[in-house]
Length: 354
Ligand code: SF4
Ligand code: SF4
Image 1: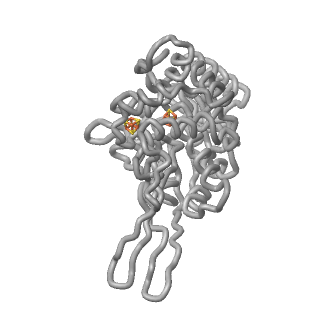
Image 2: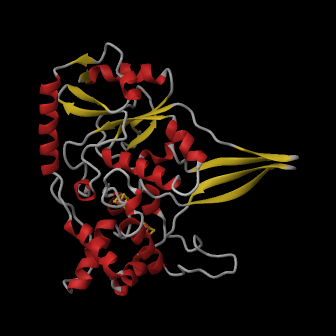
């Protein structure tokens, strides 16, 4: 086992950045924590839960996938050696799930090549990073079980370093990483994990709602109608979600005879997302679209998580944090249960243990 002193981290990041693009948390002038290209000045370890997951590293908000030239076209598959530092376990699982989803039926070279060239340095959570964290419910945290290159556990003035892959071993070869006693380090990690789990609430309604949807797709239409009346169709829930991968394609003329085909994030909450060429729209109301979104998280694709997660929500809580009208996955799960039990209406989730 290795350890790295926190005051050596910037030097390590600079070394890593000499060989690849490093995406790391940084504090913006407005005080927000975001993932961006490593910058020594604004780099921060005080990251809690950054407002957006780093999914754009594998699935950019907008990217050119084809270029058309006078007499032909060429596919544009880009991907540079990249390292994502400080990714939270839920967001890391979101990357794994998204990649699994994107490559399930057909090869998606655009995200696959980026994924193959990306190293991940996960930072295990010592407890809830915000009142809406529920990774212990979705089995996606507070530490990563697999699929990472290295994982860091906070140990005061240093991090304990768990190596998860051969590429991870290569990352810790510099003498800034000190060897430490394996047994003692493992004991510290077990203590860290025990305490972390005890500090993150389990939300039983999430699994309960999954079962109710599974049994006979039991969910009251009234629940979806109520949420549909409130939703302002901003799409924010999709854009902050680590496992949302809806996209659209558009074409842009660059000059006479040349152009680009661009893939951009889309949202299944948008009215036009499922509109067919005939004009028919199978999800014509916000209620139907909200229902569909949550069925995708709670009912479908469970078997597509090869990493032991509960469903294709990784419990980051961002939809509860950012939906302007409080339609987060927690609120939806609770509303499904309370509507069936006749115990009340949907209400904003105000957080558990933090
Ligand atoms: S559905 Fe909500 S809580 Fe679940 S992963 Fe997406 S943003 Fe996070
Ligand atoms: S964030 Fe809320 S209001 Fe916006 S589309 Fe999603 S559910 Fe609707």
